[in-house]
Image (tube, rainbow, N blue to C red; front, side, top):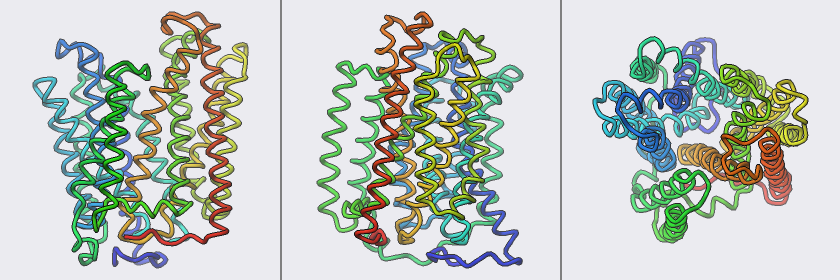
Amino acid sequence: MNVNQDNPPATKPGRATGFRGALLTLSLSMLLPALSTSIVNVALPSMAEGFSASFQQVQWIVLAYLLAISSLIVGVGRLGDIAGRRRLLLVGIATFTAATFLSGVAPTLWLLIAARAAQGIGAASMMALSMAFVAETVPKPRIGRAMGLLGTMSAIGTALGPSLGGLLIAGFGWRAIFLVTAPLGLLTFVLARRYLPADGPTRKAGRLGFDYVGTLLLALTLGAYSLAVTLEHGFFGSLSTALLVAALVGLGLFLLAERRVSSPLIRLKNFRDPALSAGLAMSVLVSTVMMTTLVVGPFHLARALGIQPALIGLVMSAGPVVAALTGVPGGRLVDRLGAQRVLVIGLIGTVIGSISMSLVPISFGIAGYVLSLVVITAGYALFQTANNTTVMTGILAEQRGVTSGMLNLSRNLGLLTGASVMGAIFAFASGAADITTADSGAVATGTRWAFAMAAALVMVALGLAIGSKRSARMRPRYPIES
């Protein structure tokens, strides 16, 4: 099978095993990075105790992983377009697997942090290139359901992490969360070698070369922004402000560099495509809203509803479970109704769920919270499947890697921004000096304002969806240039 085909032929019976094997490989490539994000959070107290470290120190175990992914995911996607996606994905899986094992045996905290950064580099390759491979291995009429499957696997990884991590830590200690994951990485590597199609001949972009300057500038810019919104949890002190200024300067330098090189990392003129520019912007906005449920939810359940800690995790898992159950059916809906319609349906559902979360009184208890969360999460899953399909369909083969990287980056930036900014809005609106000890009324007020802002953000995304559809009618979409 030629990896440069824009429209792969329908799967024949003789190719069924290879087709399923490729989808299994890509599914694992999406599941493992998500699992490695969520499974570590529950282990931080044990790690702090094991290394006699403070919380501020052990939080770098999480930050190093997220920073590596956010900083490198676009560059890795572009490198895959040039050097060969299968080749780079194999390198990424191998790096991820080796780093996962090293994390499990690391004798010191700083070696563990370094191993987590290396794990993030491998995860960036896996996340960026998995979606890019869909268009090369899946017939066009089935791309929607394949995108839904990848979204489902990512949601399963996120949902499975805390519970699996808790069981492993209770039985074997925190190192087990890495030593159990490493064999799954090895299995993914073997499957990738067996089932993913070989790379085609070197393309024109490869002869022009890789944009090292642009990649470095973008990585530094994204790293500075990620630190700015995480180190002080949305309350911008002197350090966060300085990092934010550095990120703005870095962005300016990156845009200047991209205008001057013959083979840029990202061709700025491609953002004239309404499907790409609106799709990335909507992904940031809606991911910000989803992070609001993860940041505000535990406080609302504990302080406003008075739920015991053991039950909070179970209630919170309703969101990822719904996302996992919605992904594949949502993909089938995309293939049947079209991505644009499903995208709008998903955004409307997310708006309704956010407004409901903002207005439902405390007296409705767990049922009111869960019902609103289910509507938000189902809407998000439909949106994500439809948006990924819209952006990844119709682009040139040699730009699939970098475009997939930008899609994943937009989601990560939304999650990072949501964790800090929406968390800060929640804390400020509550009026409490310390949200961890605030009374139920103050927490409920903070929740209402946070989700009212979330609803406003999704309304902006809905406006972008409608506006981009009108723009596409006036100016038909053209393939993204290489």
